[in-house]
Length: 332
Image 1: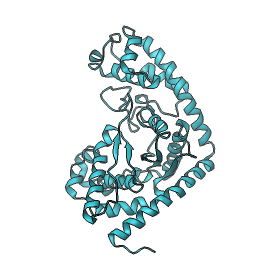
Image 2 (image 1 turned 45 degrees about the horizontal axis):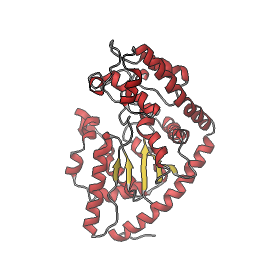
Image 3 (image 1 turned 30 degrees about the vertical axis):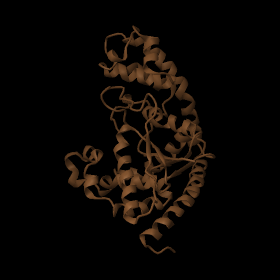
Image 4 (image 1 turned 30 degrees about the horizontal axis):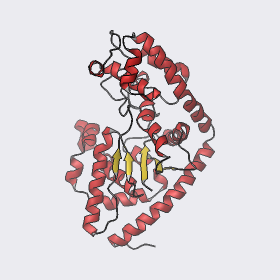
């Protein structure tokens, strides 16, 4: 059976973009694949973290996975740092990854900006750890957003380089999966920017912990333009904020953007937003309620994470034993 690996960082609150672009698709994948869904807490350390907040956010991401519909009895849900193989394999891979490959990674350039000489090594080496995350479980498919596709291509390059160097067919070349209408949900305040956990304005995003009133308020305040909704995708593409709201509506309703336009062509934004509010509250409120229930019992969340980590460690241990034997490292 093909195996899925994916994960999210426990940095701040997960939002609508995380749900539509990833979580909802993961829920569908669990019926077709063996799935491993990780809370990638080691990746979160590439930026400064407050320790108690990080602990809280690890549990919140796990709660979001389950509340969205991922079954912890059928899939592995665990936090990355609980499986030492991630770090071990990342170091071995780093010894087979040319600097030139990492220098091409655009996300490091974007995040480090003009201060790249002061950026942490972890931020620079992030893609190598991501490769280790995936290949530790010999995942065959990885659901990713467009912004992570380059990193997955690097993971394929690293797998190929390792296989060629040791003349062993150890790691598969994982395939990307980019799914759904809403692979890139944009800010509610600026349709040209991706919805982000780090945006200073909380009105730029709908958090998965927002109640019905907060969801409705944020949609009503979402930036729009004065024209009614168009009838064609060609016209919609010229209007970033309108395009974003229609994309969100289509994804929540599980229809195409053209079908969403056909329903609302010529409508004012006040009327369209009212429909979008009703739809968003209906779809997201059950997730928020389930998240709050789970977060009210941190001991149960920790039990689920430990159970997932125990199973993940079993798989990881087999891979690391194989890798160490191939590389020539002694095992205990």
